[in-house]
Image 1 (cartoon, rainbow, N blue to C red):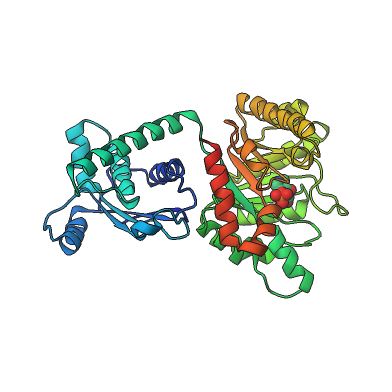
Image 2: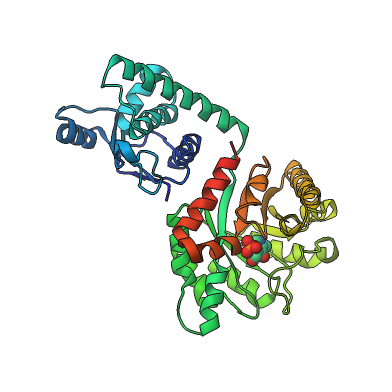
Length: 393
Ligand code: PXP
């Protein structure tokens, strides 16, 4: 996972690990290191003192320590993890009080300091190096603030159906979509999506039950509104479901749901799910009527269908389709719906959609799996994740 965070601190003083990891992701993107791996560990004073003694021969607590993994000649090689940053929550809390700031702000500032060290800067080398490093930290803090104010970063949810498609083609046990989901998460996916079809052409019941136990990020179950599948969803309780129209003959989901035409049925499913605290997303075409109907039936999310934009054969047509996606997303967001987008997105078409302020999550499957065949799943996910994160800048 690009930014991996762990706490061994006795007291976190209200530090949100989620916000800190978001800050780390933003900072990595600003430094052109979105695909790099970074590990952050929060500890207490006692633990950082032991590290400070062992690695710097200073027998006292400190605020932050950096342990780089790259040498100076491979500092830009994103295939090598950047290294580890260890922060003392106790010292950060004391310094926050001293500086009259929040502990979160102080920890983020220490994260910047540690990161700049990992990037090869060292204020202890000379006065000149001190000035250069201080400037770099100030610049990073400024960009981080700007970035946070601009847009919530879109999240990348990965659809692993096609791993199951390959497995089913042989009728054996591999490749396993459950294993694939784990690799996607380790490479930085923010969520996992699977479509349990009534005909079970790819994902099987066993997969969704296992994924429920193994997925650590967020499990989004894509499904048609069939009673049997609704029963399974209520049983496994995914983090959310996405309702899609399902036709037996189609190769993949074709169009969006016609929500206005089946309001009663969809509202009924949403009611069942809301009793089980499962948010519902409706996969819809970028059409204002469908956005409005989605609000009326009580959906929490809509997922805007990006297929026509991605399949457009001319730049002009792509622009036109993109405008429809952007304005449907804007309308849904303005009405208070959460907005996802997906279908057909690839390494060329994703950035434009991810750059929209309104989009919370992108659901991408085929393009990532196709690329994974040649570069490996871990690499394919990292590349897409870097596109999504960089688009928010
Ligand atoms: N969103 C929905 C609702 C889908 O049905 C699919 C395809 O399973 C996707 C996103 C992902 O599409 P793709 O595989 O083309 O990235």
